[in-house]
Image (cartoon, rainbow, N blue to C red; front, side):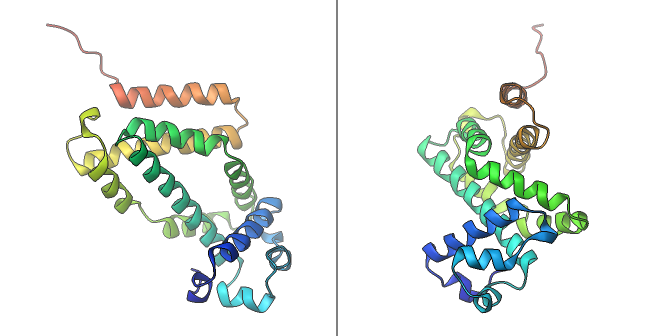
Length: 206
């Protein structure tokens, strides 16, 4: 976790450190990441770096926590702007994750990390640092337009939200890891969402 000293930095300075870190982690495998390169591009001293983070693993944890926060903020903004339309929020999130340059850089970073010898250890750390997102589900459930949903409880909504976000994550990896054509990714994604939205069971009249 970043230290209090880092959190007290100006938003401009924190953003500069994050940009420099993203550039380096997405450029080379984890074991070749150079703290010297990061501090050079961020225009901070080596001593300052170690008053902000324990090491590059600590920095990497912060990058993913910040990324999670960015995407949660995006979902909040979309849900408010679209008057609680959950399905529009999911569609907006899909386009944000697949089409923005930040996501392409994030994909390179993930690929570099997962080629590292201790990738399994990293994945465990990532799960721990990202948490389960329960508070975000509660925030959305209070504001979502429930008239467009068949979920009747927070727990049911949480399952639906997890399935939709998993579809977004799968689309992200299909495009950036598997190299699947974007048209095919979109088709697969919206097929999944339509099944979740309208149901898979075919109702027959008596």
